[in-house]
Length: 306
Image 1 (spheres, helix red, strand yellow):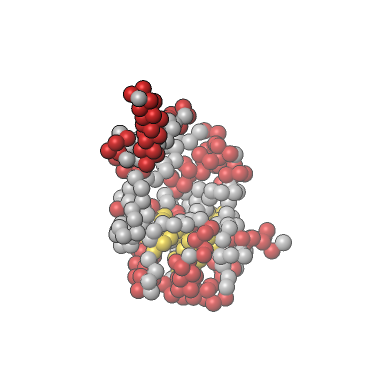
Image 2 (tube, one colour):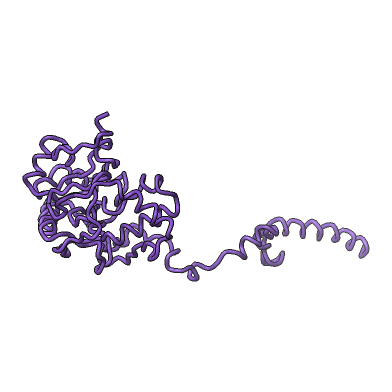
């Protein structure tokens, strides 16, 4: 009987144990099995994980952009921005200088360089020794370092520019100066550099021959919006600043010197950012007639009338 009891109990014990294991009872069947863990990463994945740097180690300029709740940074002021100016070679190559001098010999010299209506273009140049005697710094924002010579304008033009900027500001348009006066020495060194790089003919397609740049008169200035976007580039034409200038510049004695559709006369592409001071009387007449300074003065290049 004892052997029979043992034999009978053995399968019962096995069945009971199986039932307990299936029931998940932690008290009798031991600790509950832990949740399955993800399989270990493959070698390539481990390599990628090791290459990721912790977020706090990123430099400031690579940190994620602030969320929408973060207040936007204050608008940068042009005069406070760190600006650098490209400097032309101090000593241009002898051959480039000689090529430039030979070309300049065929360009007419203007008789009255100090006139507010002086015409300077690819056919007419300023005297080589001409420097305006009344250059001043207009009290307007610039995208240039504070001590830059290229902030200067002649006194009358500077006063008019201040009035123009103030009027634009009152209309909700904030302007900034990009580049005004350039000395003959600067323009000559710059052009010679381009001649040495690309030759005379190609250099003339994108840079003014010394003495023929309106910037040397002290009466011209390139302008942009105060944010500097599209400064001296074609996209400026579509900005509210360009549209305001096209409508109101003449009220303060300025004209858009190189208007659209007049390239054959001015010799330059459309530049809505390039303002030239000529005085209110002339500026208003040029605007009303839709003409250029060449047409107003009756000095149109022969090539334009062919």
